[in-house]
Figure 1 (cartoon, rainbow, N blue to C red):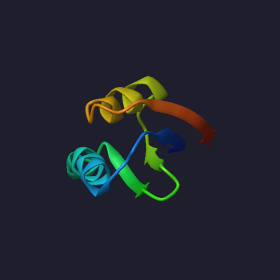
Figure 2 (figure 1 turned 135 degrees about the vertical axis):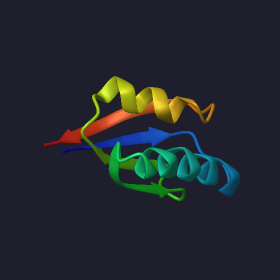
Figure 3 (figure 1 turned 180 degrees about the horizontal axis):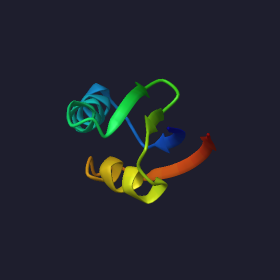
Figure 4 (figure 1 turned 90 degrees about the vertical axis):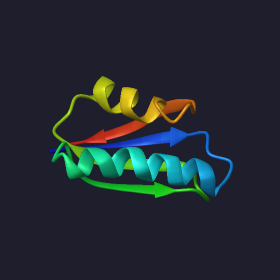
Length: 73
């Protein structure tokens, strides 16, 4: 599993809720093992077996700008 951290342009709870919903669906499918959405720091951390670009594509479905910050193995 790989842990990715992203900066995501979130301005309100609606933004963070949209990301929680998207990532929750991926978790239900077993494609994401863990995630956190932190509105105050505008960061999202995702632990998954997916490739970086696949995770970025999922996050971009919320309609927000996504920037990769770091990756941990």
